[in-house]
Amino acid sequence: RGTWQELFLAEFDGPRHRKVIVVVMGNDK
Image 1 (cartoon, rainbow, N blue to C red):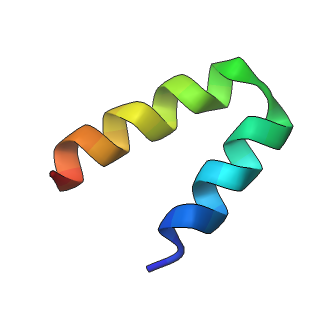
Image 2 (cartoon, rainbow, N blue to C red):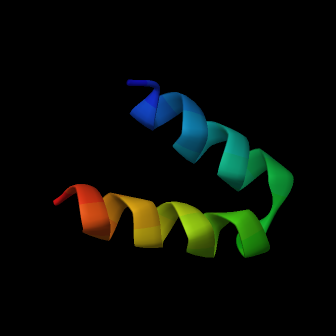
């Protein structure tokens, strides 16, 4: 639910958020 949106927001926000997204993606997988 809003996976690509979070990724896009993270990329736009910065690399710091990107790390969080990576963790979430890994957990989802």
